[in-house]
Length: 596
Image 1 (cartoon, rainbow, N blue to C red):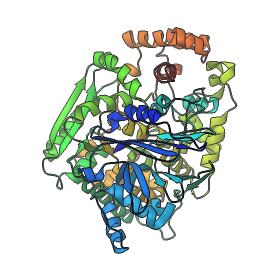
Image 2 (cartoon, one colour; image 1 turned 90 degrees about the horizontal axis):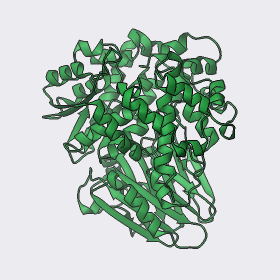
Image 3 (tube, one colour; image 1 turned 180 degrees about the vertical axis):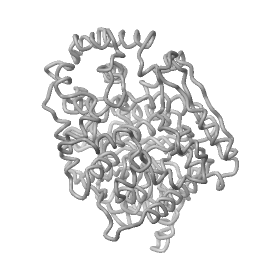
Image 4 (cartoon, rainbow, N blue to C red; image 1 turned 90 degrees about the vertical axis):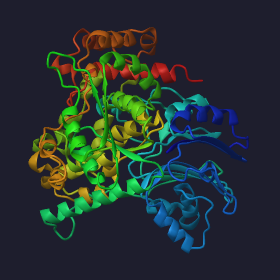
């Protein structure tokens, strides 16, 4: 797990090594164990290493294979690298290191751009081919590892974070009105390739990009998710057996692909508790970690799930640590979290993962987390609501998911930023793609391949990696997701959702955890905006920078500030609309207003 950056020139000039240095410095927190650069003609790479596999200097990057004339910068983990290494040895390749990075180089030489179809893992990487002067970029199937791009007629740059590209300079920082509409409709999700900035794009998940020396590109999607029933119908018992087998295999892969100890982020919910249950007999003295926040009082919302995480830790006798964060610390640490956000994100998980990452990174380098289980196995409350609704697929989806109607959006942003209902157009197109049997199959495929990438998955990479903590997500193993996508929706929704996971948990983890109501990562102070948090948001939205930007209509802002807790000032999934506005403006002030 690392930070990568690079530049490829099209104009005959040498790459800007000062810009590479600035970008690399911005990525330093992702990889504190080693820093390296490489240049060859029009190409330069920068790399920051977090040592997880092969801790020796042989695995440092940029990794140069002089014999094959290939150079790599890589962020992520290839979980099946050992099996691929055996296969490549049989083909006659020799290795100078013991890790997964060199396996990528040899696999690219052996199988070309199709090498990505052989990889099981999370990855974003760039390979420079000296023979052809081509740059090859790739991203994993679920976009777990980020890859941001900025390009003009003179050069292409890439980096593991958007702020790293900004410090490189020369980026068009105008707001993208289409992306802005997505951002405010899909709870800050901006599906690839867009970002909120006109000059920055993301390589989509499950995609590769070949950059040719003349500036032309070849982009390919190497994997899609099929959400149709299998030809041979499975019984419920067969579905459950397969779920148990695939999940256990996924956990085992993520455990073995590490030369350092692996812990678990234990929220106290079903998903992370199941991971603990599957790991407990494989990892002596398993480390588990939980975080909770201060209640607001008045019964607004319980702010920790220690009741359940304690039960799981006790049941499996893990070496457990829990951290309780007062609201005063949330307030004082928010600026740090915003400064580390690669894109603006309003989920409460963001500050939670940032503060938990700080604590956990002092104990271990790698943890597993339950992210993805709800999207893959149907755990959120809005899925049954959508399923019971009437109308088109778009209507059923939007009325239970969109943060605001298009008409409200037009009342919120100033005319220069207004567009048509582009998010409805995007969602309708995605839901209507072939190879999904039922409406919920469409929804879950869209969730797993688009929405999850730029919400929970992004924050699970972004915030812990600010503390050089690698998070692995077993529920996003592509073979497990492919299995789940073929399940009948009724099976997933049984017993209130996530039935397959509940069923395989029986007898393994405490029933009280399985049968509890679904919880969320609560930070009440960012939902029920009061006191100093309200004053913070007021100061941001009334600041000179905000007024000068002219993004929001003032009567809309004033209405939210006057009474942020009335029902219409919450989104359909219970987020604060005021925090949403304030966070974007704050992020723009921190990252964009100071950009060179």
